[in-house]
Length: 610
View 1 (cartoon, rainbow, N blue to C red):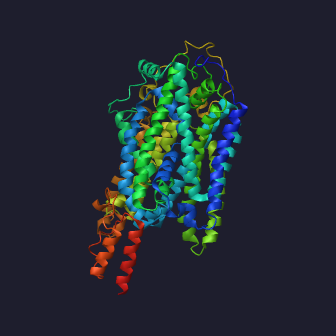
View 2: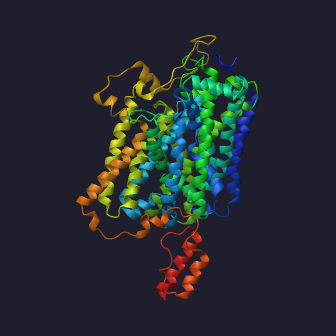
């Protein structure tokens, strides 16, 4: 009986058929895009889809690329153990989408860049660009290893699928459609995988509601179990999740993911116009709302079923990341194919993120390292290099999955990595975009100081986790278990859990204050330290006296909320016809559409010759 503890069923033949069929279909999308675009085998086509994508598929891809298997498995477990404060991230997604669309899209779009780190060289110097790219590569490789490892471990222990077989298969499938199809394959595969992920959540919620006698019963159980205490306005920065840590810290952390992360920027600059690029981010915001809401409801459903027999305490599972797969096999096993659908949902999230990461890693490597070193490379040679690098990075990401076994709470660890590395980088970009007096020396010193501080607190928090009174894990019961403390499945507890439970370490003085800082504040700390240090060092080294930088490298008020073009194509032509030597009427340097930007550029060149 579901919710009574003990062993659960494993995969049936139909589950394997459904799972394999969906994954092969995803790989087939990559092959289709490869065949369809074989006559357009340029580097721009491979990395940016020829800059001809539209808003809806890009929006779904933006959502899917960070709604990974970690999210599919980790977020419901978060609701099950800690309640619904995580739901407040809907506010963070709103702030992040507006911030990214109105500040960063105009900047990157008008510069027509492929790698976001090209901006760092334009604004500062080559060294800062190389450091920024290297930080991104390390961050993405670590994160992608976690994305592969966590769902594979959970699925291995619950379904019996071989762990390393799943890891290698993930890398191979991603390599196939990244290598052959490029960004278009990744985006269209993400669209399909997003549908599968949402279907998996819906299946769990619907079946749980039937078993519990309606969703009202699930909501009532969650209320009495303390799972619906969402809003906490405690200003304590050591509190793991509160309104302030999520809305302030979470917004900046997600902004660092969407504003400057190559995996995301590469998508929205592939749109054919700036309007589509901005719209894709706002549609992505809605997609994130829906996804996190379904994940939260799945977690509440799980609590309603297991409120009297917690599988984790009962030792039916060895880690919190196995809770949702355990629930799936417990309540859906009697419907052949549905467990396969859910596993495909978690696996699709993994495929989506890994493919996005591989494609982005290839883009920054080629644009930031190879093209500057070998400018004579032809388009055909670059295409072969792109494909070769896809294979290489696929192997690296599989290898990094081993490092992920040393992490604890996989959802928190994944977000912490972004906060530690992307926080200082976002601070550097904001220095460059908003402060004309900041020079290369200030930017470099600020970045190094910000990174040092965030690594210090982040690694300290990993070694000395916060005490339970700061994490506020809610109570669970095993009173209703048929066989309490019976290990019904063969489990393998992650190495980090073994370390923490078998070899307790003495805690230094900093462990209960600095190292206990909410992981969501890692990013704001990095931004503040980077910006303050950068401004001070620039002032000391005479940054404000430097020669004026190019105006298009900065954000102005004309960048904000530009959905319609200030200068339509007809207006540009009329102004040029009236006075070919005077283009002051054109609202340079921001344009909402590539076509109009290119038209003005052509006019300027003609005027210069005239």
